[in-house]
Image 1 (cartoon, rainbow, N blue to C red):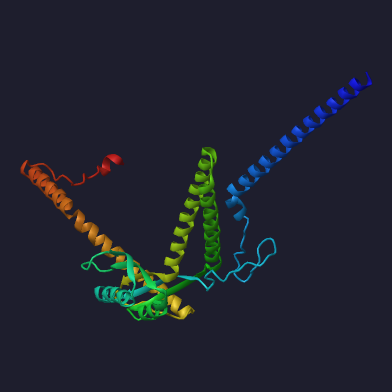
Image 2: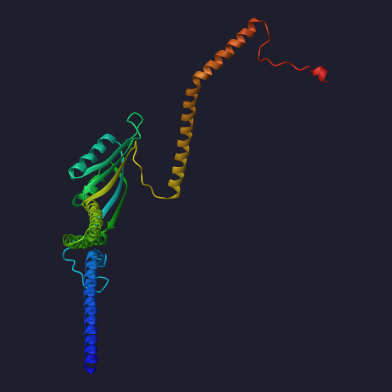
Length: 314
């Protein structure tokens, strides 16, 4: 009896031990698979981790948000300046001066992005507006030479420093290219369709961002390499004079403006009469005919005033 009880106890212990061992093995396998899936998920989201690499747009700072130093040796950190200028000229030889500006733009290696001319030679007062793109290394020479054509009446220059933005675009492109390489490696290792489709979506998104930043960098390069200059040329009979701002000059200017306004009024009146002349002639002719007809019929003049009967009024 005792032997049978001992056999039963030993058999139960063996069963319990086997069951515990199986459960432990299952737990170990599940843990391993979970760790593998977690690792794959982190790798698939590698481009999100790379996005955490943040570069300060100030090129003088060489640390990221985590306080670690960032190597900027691979970036172009030279000063990036964009020039936008305007020049206004007066000209007595309009056609000749317009041709000179065009020749000067070509001579400096630039080109005209737009060119508009207003008015005609018969009436005078013509004007031209040109938008020129000049190589940055020839910009100062062009500005000096353009001021010698005709008479310079105004000149303005605007310089924009885009160095920080330029370095930032370079850093973003580098980060995106790193993400793309990681995703392409994961794409080659993907063993199921779901992971493959997810990684391909991420790749398409990163490629779109790379194209966008590449286009932005090309725009920056174009603005840096070619300065923008707007040239306005106005045809005049006499050049504008620069006078001192005093009372005597104000009086002369007021009198001149008043006389010029009076002359303009007379000119407008004469022109209006000329426009109305045909109608005036027709009206005068009709009145003349009416008066003649009344005279032939022996009637009193059409416009003769009647005498008042002074006696009756009294």
